[in-house]
Length: 148
Image (cartoon, rainbow, N blue to C red; front, side, top):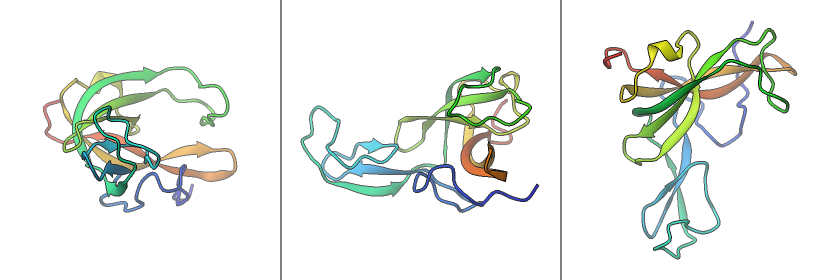
């Protein structure tokens, strides 16, 4: 299997394998962060701005919650065949203090996770019926030595 190079969602994350970032927006008036990018109006009830700047979000955060996906999700999700269960993490980003969901890297299950440990954003691959190598996406990985 060759390495995936096509992102699952264009413009949602950088393709820098060494230091990938999710791409979000920050309200120019109040500083509220959004992911995915928001370009209409600020959802902060104390703000009336519609001006946003595109920003790279924090690569690290704390594991807020987690679960496992033990069954093959329905279409339009394209699962590997045969389906292999995986963990899903909700990570609170360091600077933005917002929670972003994502798969956990292969080989790390719920038994390896603990709320509060430090997690890092990395690139990983998910299955795609049209591309034998799959597509690139963001995944969460426990930071080594983070107290697991």
